[in-house]
Length: 608
Ligand SMILES: *[C@@H]1O[C@H](CO)[C@@H](O)[C@H](O)[C@H]1NC(C)=O
Ligand SMILES: *[C@@H]1O[C@H](CO)[C@@H](O)[C@H](O)[C@H]1NC(C)=O
Image (tube, rainbow, N blue to C red):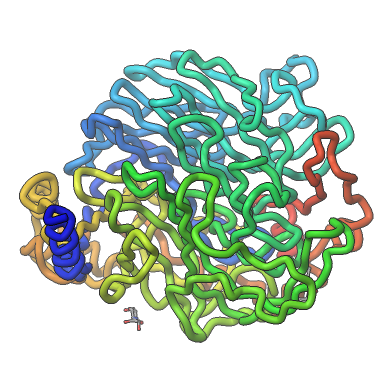
């Protein structure tokens, strides 16, 4: 008893002193030189609004090596660069998976890495998809050499729905050393069989020798319909913890069942329109660092942006138990859900009772008000605390696309500590020039992630057709955040030391300066003190403006001109006309509009 009380007092004290403040955010601006160029901006599904393009990032279990994966700016070839986890500088030579078309997930090992990507199958492959449509594939590299490669779709993977391909790889890769398994969760389309032309998602497991494992109750070839959002986290055994955002009206924790059925847990009611549900897992470029295990506990935490939900009606097409809702708000606020284990929600599920007015009463809100919130991610500081982050859009325009993102004035990247119950600890800190654009990983007592240092605005669309003005960069920045008093003497000490050493100039840079010619003329710039405020700790290197800032002006087609109707080549009618019956294994298989990265549909509608 005495011990227990002491523990309680200690942890209360810790949570008081552990609140985040701006001095705890360290940056390593432009620390990583890339050997190839990278386009950090990706068009969102349907809207063409700007998203950060993901650069998967992972650190090895021994903490000695980190890896960053990025898609070549030509959109063909995924490069994997080893990174020093204390200086965030490049180590060794870049590995290139030349056929890769998306950096879809990365796991770091003590002796190498595994990459989830998608690529065309070799020509002449029997039953390969036509037109070189890429198929998901897992690569393992050991000490710089490929040790195995395992197709996760195509003719090698049995599926009652037909052979599967991933024209865009929206998904994630995780690894469990306890289970000796990689798990990959990704969006697929069938190119043969009953589901031909339709979109769903698949979960595949591969063992340490690169052998695909078909695990009953875990492997899935057709789970959620038109999934525009995946959240996936390892567990000590299969099935791993999985979530999907489907096109029928809900977000599911589907560790149990891998589908969109009520043997899973309905975490949220979301209005769905044109196949999307508000980009809860980030949409294009998203689907990472949103579902996170809290240290060695059995708990998981999930954070997402939502419009809230009202007015539950029956989803006629799916049938009893499935619902539709209207959005409560036009803008999205940040919410958090806690799971006591990989299959169990803490608190109530989202309601499925027809006629319910408040269809979001189960939600634990982190933010409130009229601003929009996007690019939501979560990471854990061990078992007791987690970090949530989001980008805020003030005065958002949200009524152009009802279930997609919003546009408006970028009002900072926010970092909020929460405890293991999801309750807010202290106030959020706010940065105008640090973004989250790749996996948030634990390095010592810190949480670190990659981003591209550039001016960020969320008020327009990506200019898709004028490739000459594409934004590219050859530098990746990193940021880390720690809780105060959480071992700053150990790993974070060396981190901030090398940050100041690496930035040798003297001028202080602001967010705006970070991408302009005048900042570059001043050469290397830096703060002196590693422990100052956010603006002080940001430094700018001469080459920073490799990231050109032509995006905003380069968009000739105003968003107004892209009306919802002409933006829809696959009309809602066309979607419902081709909807599928329930699949053979009883999972609801539904059809989907294509979650492309804007190359097909979006480009077509920009040209109207
Ligand atoms: C989503 O909300 C819109 C606008 O409020 C509504 O017109 C639409 O019917 C809703 N979608 C569903 C599937 O109920
Ligand atoms: C966060 O920073 C941005 C950009 O500097 C600013 O516009 C915004 O008002 C800040 N938000 C808060 C809540 O302090």
